[in-house]
Figure 1: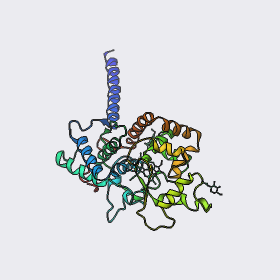
Figure 2 (figure 1 turned 135 degrees about the horizontal axis):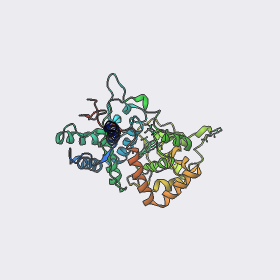
Figure 3 (figure 1 turned 60 degrees about the horizontal axis):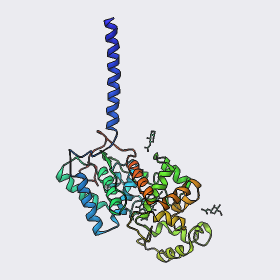
Length: 331
Ligand code: HEM
Ligand SMILES: *[C@@H]1O[C@H](CO)[C@@H](O)[C@H](O)[C@H]1NC(C)=O
Ligand SMILES: *[C@@H]1O[C@H](CO)[C@@H](O)[C@H](O)[C@H]1NC(C)=O
C-alpha cells in the first residue's frame, strides 16, 4: 500500500515536474514587457532618445525604422538579421534589392547600441532595439504608442537570398498578399491593418514606374490609378529616368503622420502600389479599408496590436542566438 502510494505520488511529482518544466520552457519562449527593467532600466529610454534625435535631424528616420522592423521580422523572424553587414564571404539581407538602397535608419540603431553597450554591456539585443525604435517611430509620428514585449535575441545568420522569397512584392494581388502574411501567421485583416504603415514615408520611383508607363502592355498607366494622381506621379517619376534617387511620398498630404489618409487615398484610387490598391479588389479587405478610413481610433488600436504580433514572429529567446556587441557584426 505504502509502496503503491509512493509510486503513485512519484508519478504525480513527475507529472508536475514535467508540467512545470513545460511552463518554464513556455515562459522562456515568450517575450515580456519590461524585460530589461532590472538588467538595463534605461534601455527603452535610450532608444527613444536616439529615435527622437534621429527624427529631429531627418523625419524620414521614422518611416525607415518602421519598415526596417517589418523587413527584419519577415525574414528569419525578428532577430536583427537585417542589421548585419555583408562580409567578404557573405552577402547579407541588407544588400538585397528589397533593402538596398531604400532601407534607412541604421545609424539610429548603431547610436542606441553604442550607448547601451556602455550603460549595460552585452544585455540589450539589436532585435529589441529595432522593435523599440519602430514603436517609438509610430509614437513620434502621432500614432498610438504600445508596450513592446522584449527579450528577443540576435540571430547569427543573414542571407541576401532569403529576402525576396519572404517579403511581399509591390505588384502582389490581394491573394498573394494574404498568403504571404499567412506564411508568417498573420491574418488577412492584420495584413490590411499593417499595410496602413504606408501612410508614412516614401518610395523610390523604381517601385512605381511599371504602373505609370505601358502598364501590362496597355501603353498607358494602370487604369485603376486615378488619372490626376497618375499625372503627378509621371511628373515626379519621368519615363526611362536613370536617376535611381528619385522618390515620391506614399501619402503625399501627411508623409510623416501616422493617420488613416492611406485608406482614404485607396478609396480615391490613389494607392501608390498595386499591393495597396488591390485591397479594394476583395470584399473583405475592401470592407476593412472602408472601416479604417472612417475610424482612426479603430485603426490605430488595430495597428498597435498588429505591430506587437508582427514583432513576435519566429523570435529567438532564452539561450538561443546571442546579444550582438555591434549590430552590424555577428559576435
Ligand atoms: C503589404 C505588403 C507590402 C509591400 C508590397 C510593401 C512594399 C513597399 C515598397 C516597395 C516600399 C518603397 C521602398 C522604396 O522604394 O523606398 C515601401 C515603403 C514602406 N513600407 Fe512597405 N510594403 C508592404 C507592407 C509594409 C508593412 C507591413 C510595413 C510596416 C508595418 C511597411 C512599412 C513601410 C514604410 C514605413 C515605408 C516607407 C519607408 C521609407 O520612407 O523609408 N510596409 N513598402
Ligand atoms: C506559425 O504557427 C505554426 C503553428 O503554431 C508554427 O509551427 C510556425 O512556426 C509559425 N510560423 C511563424 C512564421 O511564426
Ligand atoms: C494584364 O493583361 C492580361 C492580358 O490582357 C490580362 O489577362 C491581365 O488580367 C492583366 N493584368 C492586370 C493586372 O491588369
